[in-house]
Image (cartoon, rainbow, N blue to C red; front, side):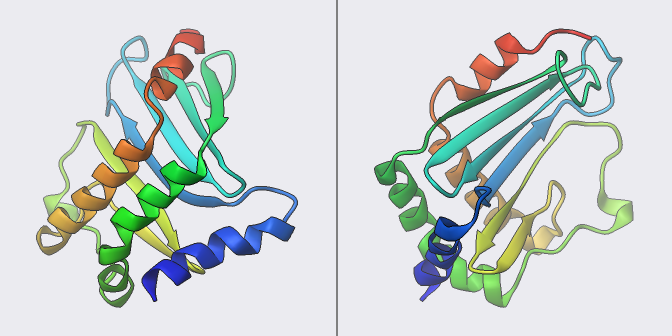
Length: 162
């Protein structure tokens, strides 16, 4: 059942003009001076595309940001879906929650994401409550492993320091 929910998003986008995001994960350096700050975002899209956008400093567009796209093969997408499937129903039944304000560290880097299970977005908080940490980290690891090798590094090389 969970896989069919995940695939519902993929199949529904076939008629859409703009590819929809089925999964996204991102990392950032946290609060640093602009010359050391960075962030990037990796999006797995319907239609078989994965893209990475890397931004240097606190840029929000080019030339400080660069986006690189690659094909997201059917085999890679299926491997990602197969890895997520055993976790999907639990994520739907018990969505991860954000940690309390007094539990969130100030200033450090973080990794977060979002996963679409059918029409339901599952937020993968950078700082989930303690009970959700292992589930969120497990899904983020799957998304990271599903990212084509070198994709983020290529976007990083293309982004210019503002």
